[in-house]
Length: 372
Image 1: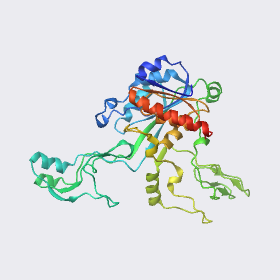
Image 2: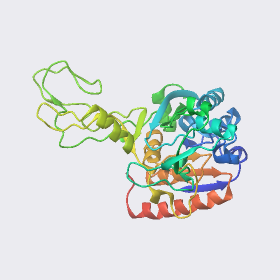
Image 3: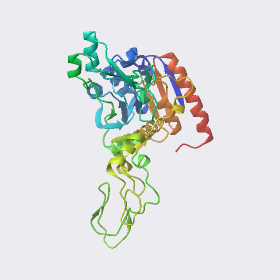
Image 4: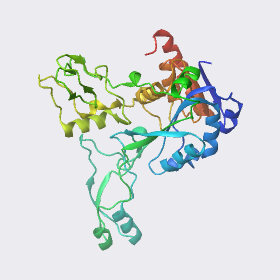
């Protein structure tokens, strides 16, 4: 099996799979937020899903699952109740979310039957004007501002009193649970027997500028960035993070990284060598329209770079990645591009077709160049 797509309910497909056969699970399951009224998002998967996922996973295999900020607790508890060991909570930060908030002032004017005063047309920072139709923001979030092009002022007394009040914050992160199937014996013994149990630290280090020579230290007892100690006196030794920074449980997209760097500044070494802003500690990922592929209208497609990093973090070389909630197949494409095998399960037949098309293209490309 190099890449396989199964159309159907994962609760019916996984029982047909061999026990202890999967090296890693990387998935973006429903959040249970009733997203855009979609049937598939009616609830977060309960423990019975994760019990079956546990059965097919090898001892020591890791599970990576995205969750919604309002329902992450249910997802995590279900995974833990199924027998998985929760190892960490990762946070994916992005700067392009849009609030789906009710304008309290407008709601009060509407309830009172009062017509609001039109002040003009909404204009964005880049000089463009809002469109009259609602659009989807990056990562599938609804852009309510784009769907309401007019700037209005309250009319009724109650609406004036509550002008500026809403009901929701801007979404800027998604939590990701990292869990592991209990190991057999020690980690060392488990890794030797199954190839699972650890995470790929060196393969997921955050790169650094090769011109940055500030990673060298000759001072005894100097604490380097990242908590690495160099206690050797009178010797110039390469700092432990010279191959890249230790991967963190915080992940930024490029826009969030830019905002962070703008606030923290860009420090330099004593030798005036640029070391980068605070975002240099974290992996950056940004979605691309081209990543979706032709005809892919799935509302919650994740950035390819992010999914490749997650697959690489938890999957041993040549291992099998399972995604029981495959959607349009981004996890599968990411796994294939990283040189892993892939098994995807999706209930919607149309998304299965899209995923298969994307996987076929990825497999063709992978034949032309070696995986990283």
